[in-house]
Image (cartoon, rainbow, N blue to C red; front, side, top):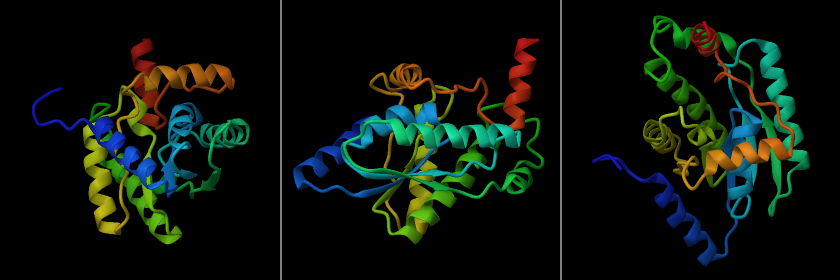
Length: 211
């Protein structure tokens, strides 16, 4: 691990161990970007939490892709075997809000400042919903992706959680073979796996790589 970096998977394990010792089952609002990424996270965390999956992704492009991902997410929740209940909460598809956020950052590389602001946009909304709903924690599935910056995600999550006064559940779900397990679960449930992150910039980046 690089100097100064926190192992958020180990930090998560400490929290889960404490919950087991206390024999408590808190309510978690889980921001999800798509069904495949949520699959392992639901399998893992549903043993400790009563989860509500919050689908808030104004970055997704085009709208048909957004609808497809919502339907896949709902299908997975219906079919997946979990210990504690999992429910679904739809966010508002505020594509114009994402467009305003991305203004001036159109040519920033994938994984840079535009993505960090996108993390913040979605996590802030999740924190506010968690506060409104009286949830004990909130977090996101995003750290399961090898392409997402888990350090930055956790920094943003902790900051917006502090502002909203709702604890952010730290994570790095790609650890412990989490990403590989999400691929296995995607096959098991025959999930649609998109080949780009979701926004029009990531779609264009994929097309450029393909030549």
